[in-house]
Image (cartoon, rainbow, N blue to C red):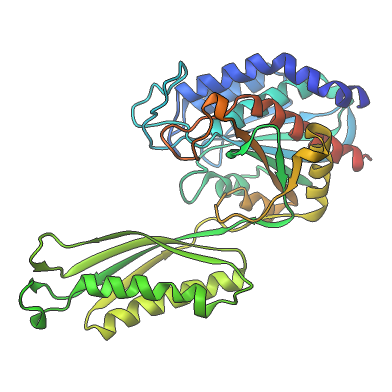
Length: 398
């Protein structure tokens, strides 16, 4: 396998134009979560053309899983990429702009898929050097609850897998660098809806009413005490109210109000406590002011928790790919990712590769209408994943 590792960068550079072409095709033809049809079909066609030992479609709904058995015995390692888009109008002025009104790849999933297809192409060509089996997981619906990962896991996507790895390109990090962490690196991501009922009336006669806006305001203020007074200052929690909707006219006291938001945590106990207190605060504040509140609390993706041994393998691979000065320890972030479901089943690591470059206009954050990446990041990500999985298989060679 030394020949494959030695020449991996060269092989990727030779294939880079194809990787970019795939990415631009997917970028021009995005599909929303749980509505992906042409994207998984194209992925499956490419994988079949590579001579994979097995290509499964419809995994967990719309996922694609391909298996490549190496020429030598060994463990089984999986690599995951996602391929769904977002309901956002593409506002970039580029030749590969989305052709689907109101839908675009605003998070880099088109690039994740393309870089993994590129790596799959190279590994298939050199399968005789691989000491083990590699499973390529192409996942639908990462962006929308309940997420595609949980269904793919239930449908056997990681059955028999010893470890799993994935990469997320990140436009807020500069291209040519990588970030790798151990333990919790992404948060439990929960959502809530609070529906408040009061008693409406004339704005000049407040004593005859129960003002739903006042109740909502009290709830918003009190929710901040979850972080300041209900959770240890050594632990992390974020409670964000994202929308506050009430009222129809300037001189009418609103009888209803709806709040929506998100709660982000890392530790299971903190997650439980935050949910409990949010419900108590909403109902208590409403009752104190003469109204009522109903809370719909939805638990989203669990925290992404990298295992130490697998993160160490990825760290070594990153140094080989980027150089020691361009690899940093990943600090936990409050974003959510359903890669967590794979890590609940098998050990592994989720890695971050920089994709930002002001000279190429790749400065906008994820989920922004002008989001884009420096496409050179895909070659870096392919190499990092390749060195990681090959390093893992070599380390555990039978």
